[in-house]
Image (tube, rainbow, N blue to C red; front, top):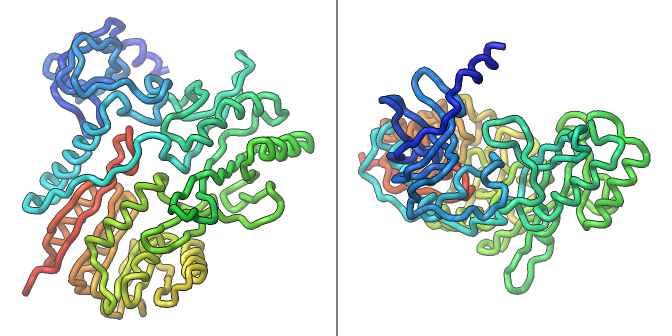
Length: 458
């Protein structure tokens, strides 16, 4: 009741606002009687009419209803559902301007949080801005009143599912499945007990002679809350046959995921790293980068910066399934990859064997704790690559610095924790030499970054 009363108090008339700048998440910032207002869908320099979404003590939130004076950076969104869907917040901003905003976010965080300004600002690493997403979780809900099924992402500022038939940022084959899935799922007995479908896309297992690797191996992982009837089970298999996709079911937790179609063959998808002659295998539920082409460019860029040599030993922390570890092994004497997940460690070893690499080893360890006493940490490393989760690596920065590597390359998915950790590395004797962004998630406010640290001369 309290939330309902608060919503009822929101002003209903549209406000005319002048947008002064963009927030870090891509919303326009205006002022209402001296109070900060965040305006979704508005750009710097625009005059807009906006409706209230929420009011808070320190700031208000609004949504642009009408653009009275448009900014030069405003473009027609590539997706027809951009105004409703909460999956992409910045489709109305030109991709070049999106990257400039992300660069501003990174360098402001470096200055304000890390206290760092004297370093090279590298050009952004980019790839295509549509049809790039290879992993996603699609929400599913049957609407009884409309006798229809919703399949897609959540609406902006809402738990409701957006009504959509396609998606501009998803892999094209996956996007083309949304409308057929809506019709198909609505006819099933289990239509009320399917809350989500996870999607994973791999590249064709065999690389073409031209080095082109189409992402066409699609997996659908169906979460079902109740056992499926025999008819529904067969219907899912037929859908998989008709649309040439692989089908997996998840009746309970993540460990219950299992393949049901096709019945022959393994449970691996693949992506290729042609610059290093590698084919990487992964299970559909494994963490992999959602943007395959950007991932390839990121790895090549990272190795160019780290500059591994044939006589060097390198440590790769938070290594996952070996996304950086194995490319490093093709250019250096020996690489040690460390990851918290035992399953990912097994996957890394599997990929090393499949690619014929015997100068690499993987270890499982909790990298949120001091690992100084481990056998692998007792070795000497020339260089270190860090690719931690969003929370960063603050707890282990002193341990990493104590290893004394000449160079540390830090890959980050959160510029705030990168800036914080950068400040700590500098306190421990390193110099930030260069940093830049990598546009892993076009049309979103997500900022992927890369930063290089060199051990200061004593």
